[in-house]
Image (tube, rainbow, N blue to C red; front, side, top):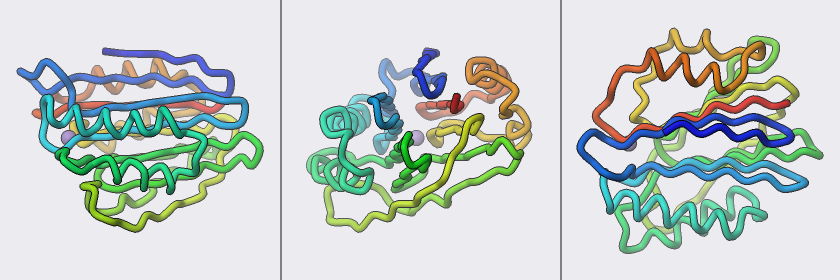
Amino acid sequence: MIEHQVLKEMDISIYQVAKKGNWCSGDAFYTVRTDNYILCAMADGLGSGEEAMSASSAAMSVIKKDHDLDTESLMDKCNQVMWGTRGVVLTILKFDFRSGVIEYTNVGNISCTFYKPSGELYRPVPVRGYLSGKKKKFKTQRIPYEKDTVFIIYSDGVVFDPVYHALFSKKDTPERMLNRVVDLMEESNDDTTLLVGKVN
Ligand SMILES: [Mn+2]
């Protein structure tokens, strides 16, 4: 499945495919735009199949309902609904239009890379672990962004070859960048989700 979203402040393209043999993906993503911010979230439910999907969709439901909260509080709320599920790894990004800063909170191996218009690449270091319902402390990073910043978020089903970095540039649209990477990507044995965004 490929989806393109034309939001006012950015364009986003998303590729998602379930693990071979499964009817559903254990990965989930959510994006929302308001007058003040755009939020993007991606979760990977532990394992695969229906139980993984139920964990990642529980996290997304929390975010759909409460996306006006800061990313750290959202992470905490998602953690609280993980009891009785397999648990998830989760990354939440919130682009605040007024401050020009991204709030970034993460637990586990959902990867995220920023490509600044200067050509500089920035990769926040993911925090180990996953959300299981057990009490956990979260850290939030604040990352400035500007027009033409490109960013990618992907689950561990993406086998990311470093040569892909060269495909992400301010000169291209998320749709074309995503299509190129998907053409090159090797098939993996896991649910796969890749989101490419570019700030307008
Ligand atoms: Mn996975």
